[in-house]
Length: 321
Image (cartoon, rainbow, N blue to C red):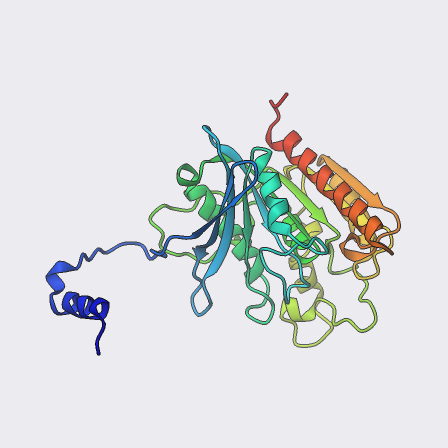
């Protein structure tokens, strides 16, 4: 037996004059799911921000507090060695969406984004996706209550590399997202503040720990020995100049996966170019700011989160009392 709902649908198909057709820019017509957090923060889940040809749709979650004026934007880029991770994961923090909602509660619009992993597309696909997300959000600033003139970015590990690269590569044409034909044009993908936790900043000098493949799969190298120019192309340090935005760098001094020398070298390069930079080195914690016990891990991550919130409040809300 055909259900009444199916009969109604078939009736519409047999009477096309009753169906509304428009020629418009491709978008997801299904409304995103909404989740409510304490402090009058609403999160809209799985908003499609880009559809690269031959790839899956790329999505973001958007956290917004109740506000009567446009707010600064913060983009979160997840880690996972460029092979795993989601926009709702944050290292050892179990409920990272709750953390992002707390950040939004402080007066920001927060976007947690997906990007193509190294099994899907080789570099520079990931940084192109990050920049596509920033452009998408700026193009819809009015809709989402964003102050398009103030945007920050942060991430850890692989997300730290991408956040740092977004911070130093403003105007680098090789990282421009592929043209989409979007009638809204191409807003800026430059950011006004960047925070990178325990990221790779120079692929030419990062040691590869025993048992690890190194950056070759992510960079699309046919062997484990990538050419010098390929390593430089993906390194945030290669694009440092005095026009870069303020940076916050955080690294655990016991990190055995990404050597702390990566952050020290990047800090030195930023200072040499007179870029404002704050660096925090936390003793006794490994990659992910994971310590020998839960209490140490909790304290290290709380220190990093507190410093990151204070950094964005200082850089993106300079008039805040």
